Image (cartoon, rainbow, N blue to C red):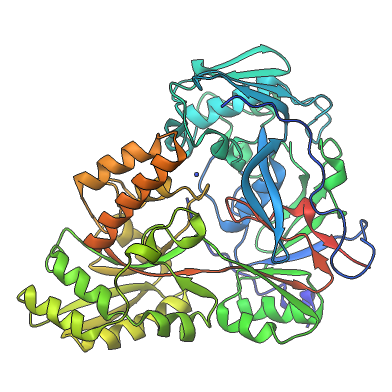
Length: 541
């Protein structure tokens, strides 16, 4: 099967998922040699099939997964993660290096951070990247469209006057406090530099931040520029000749194909018509793993899938009921038979891959129907009926729901599975109106407090289970800004213990991060946002 054979049958799919004094110098390519068994073909264009389509190119607005892939490779932040190769994948670490900034210094109190921009860096049009562009980017994030303004308070940036530009190559940020998340956040793609001159030239009275223009256009400061965009078909990325780290760009460009059907993505990979297939379901990965022409790049992830229960309505306002359900879930069956083993137990709101998980010590909910029945009895319940909402476009969720339905029947809970179109599902989720639901979440930055703040803090919009525990809220607030690593880890453990005991969800599993490639492809990355950085992708001859 060739790409032309499937090209005419594309549809779009919308998805999202919303993370001391130093002097840091230049970096080198962390992946200088191909592991594909031959010389690197730097003239090769890498063909990548994605499960969604590029809807818009604005780096500060919600967009599809495919659009996040584009913006991650088009916009370069001031600093970036260092990578370490483990299990054949370049995995992002908690160490950082200069990107657009050649160096940066942090004052002892953390309230003055000075970045020195790297000389010679240009946008794709040849315009030098200056401090004015970085300042505009932060101002747009704070005052413009989209959701980025919700991130900046975590690092003490809430007003535009906290950003200074004493000269064209210096940016000074003045956070209101010293944050343990500062450098972590500075690596996020949403803070990649935008060409302020170009952006302002497309502004109007009604559209002061040029949102209409940024829907279809970019001002590339990263490794790639958008060469062409054909929605529903393909997006072509070409190397940015002005990118500061030319030595790391190991290919001649990347063609992103919109292939919503996972079976088509798998067939295209097997036939060699594409080099990389993203977001393949476990059932296909289990088949592709047997193909000697392919490589399954697999490492742990901190993405969590959970069974949400509406804590604000009966019977889920009773902790004993929620605990009973948590004991009844057939976790290992779901991992083995739905995820085909490509997942691990989540064991709480902070999965093991996040680094400060306390689940191994604290999580008690190994499947135990007798314990579940006893808790139902303690709650005074002989059983009840409820609805479990799932996205019909997510076959794993539908399959997991059947296992959950069968298990809960054993403790007197009759579950009706509602297979909902995505639009209906997300509308009901945003209304916080579902009794039970399956949902997954991944936090950029992979910080436990950032994660718990969004998912478990009282009144948070993304706390879809309507859970509320003021003691947990206080621990989240305290831990988010704690600078001592040991104290922060202990507060995280205490917060997790509260959440695990309260069982606002049944914590199901953490799916592995998997990217399937041809076996002559290397340089697969797993950064904080789990979005491929294409400059490291290499194809061997």
